[in-house]
Image (cartoon, rainbow, N blue to C red):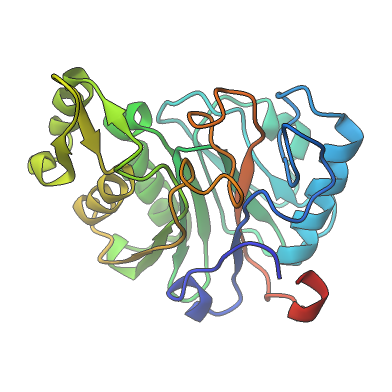
Length: 265
């Protein structure tokens, strides 16, 4: 098995998910090795092969894995059964939701926080890309609202997980970021500690969890380590000075495949 799983999401019936890292792909340096982005100058054939490996891990066929063009905003795309993956990929958004059986939605990251969500009976899923700009813009609340609307349910029925992202020790930001975060989380001071001069260290994953709680999602966990510290396991835009790939976090409305862990050691 490649990547990591959430203990909470793993309990949701008829839902498959995975927080993939950089391990297990075909791309050479500096994208080594499971790069899933066509926008970082990696060879398209390698990216296609890497995406095929991702689909295998979550159990969906070609054409059933949907992502979008992420812009650090708050737009949400609802994916239906007969949508075209290429057209959805061209859409500028930072979250995707679906109720369609057999489809997967995913977001690409290299320090930002990925959030995967599911209705607790498996009736709908969502993937959300959360950088600090998207967090302030309201992408988490809008994704929760969209999933609840699609599945005709309430936030109390949702289960969520925040995946690998840049850790607090590595994420030093200016006071303007904290001021912006304070507009969406009143107790943001609990998520910061002093840095150099007027800089502070922000807990981005903690901010994502706080926004989930504010949106009414009470059941949420956190998976993975700091992307900037563990570049052997994850892609990190900050630690690798922009010369890196993108990992994919994926959730699907399908039964998890039965994989032999020994084959991926």
